[in-house]
Length: 225
Image (cartoon, rainbow, N blue to C red; front, side):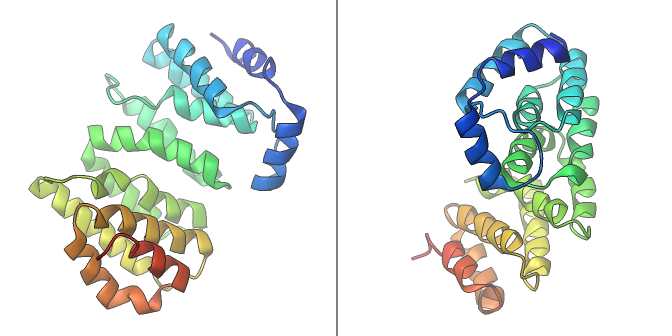
């Protein structure tokens, strides 16, 4: 599978009306094909089955560089896999995309791929921490989205608890940031964590809740009794 073949398959499923709606919704200036997400899922599943890791990394890189909305989603999906042997190149490519983030959908798909690589090697959290002081809002947001798996453990190991506390520290440092997407990301992290570690979220909200935007504070506390 090469770039031309991949783009040809995506183009077979173009929908001009959906493309216009998607462009209007996301607002980021790029080409939109209007290909439905389940279609992209099916295509990338087929591609993964015929390619080794090196080939997938190369194709993902090429798809990303087109800056076509659906091609960037496909690039992320090509690398969204729990187990990838010798995954340094895959991780390096995913991490390199962060500076290009400019819409939540592309960012979230890339971060889902990144979550798998971060779980595979939690030491990569040190690299993620460098994102928290970026001037690029989407990079700062990505630090919370890519670490969401640490909100979901019912029985975290000591290392997981350390990472959880570390990310909560990042979230606390973000509270003064009034950007809607940053506040939403804080709320998302806390809301998901509250299902598994309510006391940690209660403690966070007691200290910082009044400083958060009201919508974010409300969402963060959604599942707290």
